[in-house]
Image (tube, rainbow, N blue to C red; front, top):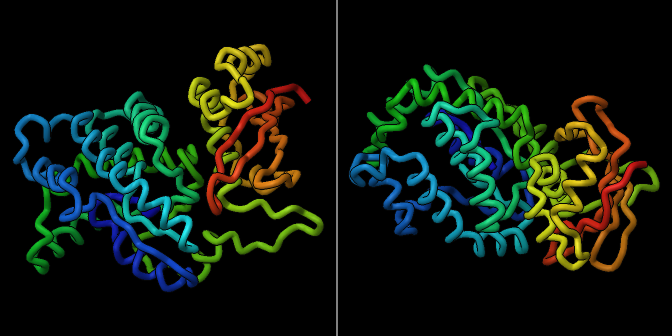
Length: 324
């Protein structure tokens, strides 16, 4: 997923990465203007043609979410049929722009609401990685203005023309990246030409495997990351629904965390490199050490299975939370 403020150069980066990644790469972009009625309503809102709805942060965010929901099955087919699905704007765009419009930060109510709507209720696929193309607001504005002058169909909308909004969006993006919101983030300097070969290798996880280690598929790692993120975010009901076959109850998860008495936080990205899974039929059993604000790596462990639903698409099933 490629993210950034308007005028950052996302389309140019997607063009370059498509070639550098190699293999079977499919490209998608949101909103799906011209393909989705919902997306066309979004465009109307951005150009002041939806009355008060265009000024309403939650109303516009619902339109963005529904546009992606309309493409969810297509995205799942892409994931099953291609090596890489490269998307220009995804769920994080909704979180960043909506929070900025409401003058909230990356840990505010709106960002939590976007997660609840798009990931938990609408069930959109969780990304494997997210790229933040970071550029100064002034540079992005100059690029957007040049594009407006030179491309007949690329006139700036009300959000693109609002420099104050773009600055706040950039700040929210920085917060999302710092928190590894939804998936790991890789920050790319948009003021210089990036090393696309190195970036592609990083995204593909091109590091050599540890001797004797079981290679966990990227989809299985995403499932672990989702379960940990839900637990850290105290989304016990959602995690329990994913684990319904095990009879896990939300109150059991909450009680285990509260009894331990520490504040859970998202682990650093290298923690997901140290997984020691046990391979089962179409699943992996994992004992994941959780992290806390007070201790770093804690003695609390999330015991779960990640079960394959389709090629490289897994869902987490929690079996227990226990103290090591």
